[in-house]
Length: 172
Image 1 (cartoon, one colour):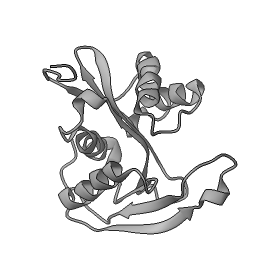
Image 2 (tube, rainbow, N blue to C red; image 1 turned 90 degrees about the horizontal axis):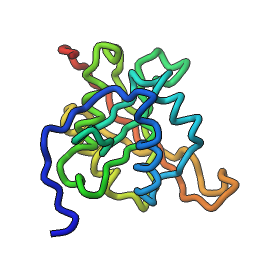
Image 3 (cartoon, rainbow, N blue to C red; image 1 turned 120 degrees about the vertical axis):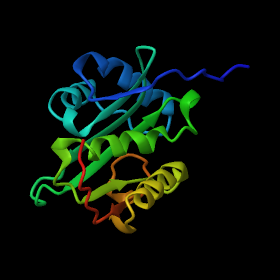
Protein backbone atom coordinates (compact mmCIF):
# COMPACT_ATOMS: atom_id res chain seq x y z
CA UNK A 1 0.00 0.00 0.00
CA UNK A 2 2.37 2.63 -1.26
CA UNK A 3 1.58 6.23 -0.32
CA UNK A 4 -0.37 5.36 2.84
CA UNK A 5 1.09 6.85 5.98
CA UNK A 6 0.28 5.68 9.47
CA UNK A 7 -0.22 8.99 11.24
CA UNK A 8 1.13 9.22 14.74
CA UNK A 9 0.96 12.32 16.88
CA UNK A 10 1.51 15.31 14.61
CA UNK A 11 2.92 18.37 16.38
CA UNK A 12 2.14 21.90 15.20
CA UNK A 13 5.01 24.19 16.15
CA UNK A 14 6.68 27.48 15.41
CA UNK A 15 9.44 26.67 12.93
CA UNK A 16 13.08 27.09 13.79
CA UNK A 17 16.23 27.43 11.73
CA UNK A 18 16.86 23.68 11.74
CA UNK A 19 13.58 23.10 9.84
CA UNK A 20 14.58 25.28 6.88
CA UNK A 21 16.08 22.64 4.57
CA UNK A 22 13.10 20.33 5.08
CA UNK A 23 10.71 23.22 4.43
CA UNK A 24 12.44 24.00 1.13
CA UNK A 25 12.27 20.33 0.09
CA UNK A 26 8.58 20.21 1.00
CA UNK A 27 7.88 23.34 -1.09
CA UNK A 28 9.78 21.83 -4.05
CA UNK A 29 7.84 18.56 -3.80
CA UNK A 30 4.49 20.33 -4.13
CA UNK A 31 5.38 21.27 -7.72
CA UNK A 32 2.73 23.99 -7.37
CA UNK A 33 4.29 26.61 -5.11
CA UNK A 34 6.99 29.07 -6.11
CA UNK A 35 10.29 28.06 -4.54
CA UNK A 36 11.84 31.14 -3.00
CA UNK A 37 15.46 31.61 -2.00
CA UNK A 38 16.91 29.53 0.80
CA UNK A 39 17.74 32.77 2.59
CA UNK A 40 14.07 33.79 2.61
CA UNK A 41 13.07 30.52 4.29
CA UNK A 42 15.75 31.07 6.92
CA UNK A 43 14.29 34.53 7.59
CA UNK A 44 10.81 33.04 7.92
CA UNK A 45 12.02 30.50 10.49
CA UNK A 46 14.02 33.11 12.42
CA UNK A 47 12.32 36.52 12.07
CA UNK A 48 8.73 35.55 11.20
CA UNK A 49 8.28 32.32 13.15
CA UNK A 50 5.40 33.79 15.20
CA UNK A 51 3.31 33.81 12.03
CA UNK A 52 4.56 30.56 10.52
CA UNK A 53 3.85 26.99 11.54
CA UNK A 54 5.30 23.56 10.81
CA UNK A 55 3.66 20.18 11.18
CA UNK A 56 6.07 17.55 12.45
CA UNK A 57 5.53 13.79 12.34
CA UNK A 58 8.28 11.48 13.53
CA UNK A 59 10.78 14.38 13.54
CA UNK A 60 10.03 15.17 9.90
CA UNK A 61 8.46 18.39 8.51
CA UNK A 62 5.27 17.29 6.76
CA UNK A 63 3.49 20.65 6.62
CA UNK A 64 4.35 24.33 6.53
CA UNK A 65 2.48 27.62 6.51
CA UNK A 66 4.30 30.92 6.17
CA UNK A 67 2.79 34.23 7.08
CA UNK A 68 3.46 37.70 8.32
CA UNK A 69 1.58 40.72 9.62
CA UNK A 70 0.96 43.20 6.80
CA UNK A 71 2.86 46.40 7.62
CA UNK A 72 0.89 49.66 7.90
CA UNK A 73 -2.39 47.79 8.23
CA UNK A 74 -3.22 48.35 11.92
CA UNK A 75 -1.29 45.13 12.71
CA UNK A 76 -4.60 43.26 12.40
CA UNK A 77 -4.10 41.45 9.10
CA UNK A 78 -2.19 38.20 8.73
CA UNK A 79 -0.97 37.50 5.22
CA UNK A 80 -0.61 33.78 4.53
CA UNK A 81 2.09 33.40 1.93
CA UNK A 82 2.60 29.68 1.38
CA UNK A 83 0.79 26.54 2.49
CA UNK A 84 2.38 23.16 1.85
CA UNK A 85 1.43 19.69 3.05
CA UNK A 86 3.28 16.49 2.16
CA UNK A 87 1.18 14.56 -0.36
CA UNK A 88 0.99 11.56 1.99
CA UNK A 89 -0.70 13.69 4.66
CA UNK A 90 -3.27 15.49 2.53
CA UNK A 91 -6.95 15.04 3.31
CA UNK A 92 -6.42 15.30 7.08
CA UNK A 93 -7.31 18.99 7.30
CA UNK A 94 -3.71 19.75 8.19
CA UNK A 95 -3.45 22.97 6.16
CA UNK A 96 -6.45 24.43 7.96
CA UNK A 97 -5.10 23.29 11.34
CA UNK A 98 -1.75 24.98 10.67
CA UNK A 99 -3.44 28.28 9.76
CA UNK A 100 -5.74 28.17 12.78
CA UNK A 101 -2.80 27.34 15.07
CA UNK A 102 -1.12 30.59 13.99
CA UNK A 103 -4.16 32.77 14.64
CA UNK A 104 -4.81 31.19 18.04
CA UNK A 105 -1.37 32.14 19.37
CA UNK A 106 -1.05 34.97 21.89
CA UNK A 107 1.12 36.85 19.39
CA UNK A 108 -1.88 36.89 17.03
CA UNK A 109 -4.37 38.40 19.47
CA UNK A 110 -4.93 41.51 17.32
CA UNK A 111 -5.55 39.64 14.08
CA UNK A 112 -9.01 40.26 12.64
CA UNK A 113 -8.35 39.43 8.99
CA UNK A 114 -6.46 36.87 6.94
CA UNK A 115 -5.34 37.75 3.43
CA UNK A 116 -3.80 35.35 0.92
CA UNK A 117 -3.36 34.93 -2.80
CA UNK A 118 -4.17 31.72 -4.61
CA UNK A 119 -3.65 30.94 -8.29
CA UNK A 120 -6.95 29.99 -9.98
CA UNK A 121 -5.68 26.49 -10.82
CA UNK A 122 -5.01 25.74 -7.13
CA UNK A 123 -8.58 24.82 -6.23
CA UNK A 124 -7.61 22.77 -3.17
CA UNK A 125 -6.04 25.86 -1.56
CA UNK A 126 -9.16 27.90 -2.26
CA UNK A 127 -11.18 25.19 -0.47
CA UNK A 128 -8.80 25.33 2.52
CA UNK A 129 -9.36 29.07 2.91
CA UNK A 130 -13.12 28.69 2.46
CA UNK A 131 -13.06 26.16 5.33
CA UNK A 132 -10.98 28.55 7.45
CA UNK A 133 -13.56 31.29 6.88
CA UNK A 134 -16.36 28.87 7.73
CA UNK A 135 -14.60 27.77 10.94
CA UNK A 136 -14.10 31.41 11.93
CA UNK A 137 -17.76 32.12 11.12
CA UNK A 138 -16.90 34.93 8.76
CA UNK A 139 -16.91 35.73 5.07
CA UNK A 140 -14.33 35.31 2.34
CA UNK A 141 -14.09 37.74 -0.56
CA UNK A 142 -12.04 37.51 -3.73
CA UNK A 143 -10.51 40.65 -5.30
CA UNK A 144 -8.13 41.31 -8.16
CA UNK A 145 -4.57 41.70 -6.93
CA UNK A 146 -1.72 40.57 -9.19
CA UNK A 147 -2.37 39.89 -12.85
CA UNK A 148 -0.48 37.53 -15.12
CA UNK A 149 1.16 40.46 -16.91
CA UNK A 150 2.50 41.84 -13.60
CA UNK A 151 5.01 38.97 -13.53
CA UNK A 152 8.17 38.77 -15.62
CA UNK A 153 7.98 34.99 -15.82
CA UNK A 154 5.09 32.81 -16.84
CA UNK A 155 2.69 32.95 -13.91
CA UNK A 156 -1.04 32.80 -13.32
CA UNK A 157 -3.10 35.64 -11.89
CA UNK A 158 -2.94 35.87 -8.10
CA UNK A 159 -6.33 37.06 -6.83
CA UNK A 160 -6.44 38.26 -3.23
CA UNK A 161 -8.72 36.40 -0.83
CA UNK A 162 -9.81 38.35 2.24
CA UNK A 163 -11.17 36.47 5.25
CA UNK A 164 -12.79 38.41 8.06
CA UNK A 165 -13.43 40.22 10.17
CA UNK A 166 -13.31 37.76 13.04
CA UNK A 167 -12.71 38.08 16.75
CA UNK A 168 -11.24 35.20 18.67
CA UNK A 169 -11.69 35.88 22.38
CA UNK A 170 -9.66 32.94 23.66
CA UNK A 171 -6.08 32.95 22.35
CA UNK A 172 -3.76 30.12 23.22
